[in-house]
Image (cartoon, rainbow, N blue to C red; front, side, top):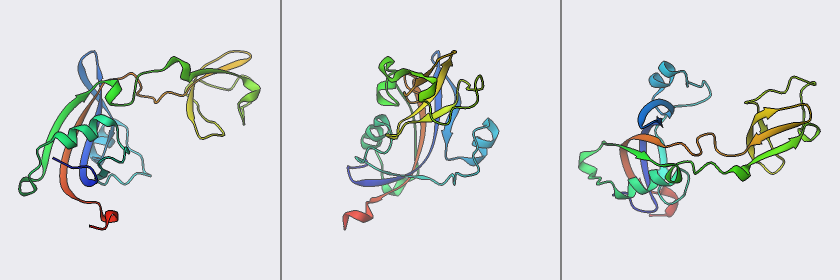
Length: 169
């Protein structure tokens, strides 16, 4: 198992689970899969992730799985595939995070009639949301993670486990 404070070097692919069936990837460290499925971004390096267990930089279910996974350093890499319900992944969809704003409160609003759904907006306090509806006077913005409320499947390949170099060990 990977202990708190250790670093797991991993390749991974996250897929949406829809009606119990595993669907398309939403993220991956595999550049060829990203290209094949239309999620490739030129500004991304597609290197293995460095997950510092306990830091909270990945969804809770990934950290929990790493801590429960039997990892023998002599038998790496180790692969596992697991499903996560929303509460262990990107959280439940919270209705209170869906907010209606007067159009004039949206900075840099495009010309009248051109504000569109799925436009990303940022608040002064660093929150990111997506416009989900627009009418004559208001825009509805959803500040939930785009995968909130969605079960996911994670394919994880643990390549290496090491002590965190910043821990001084």
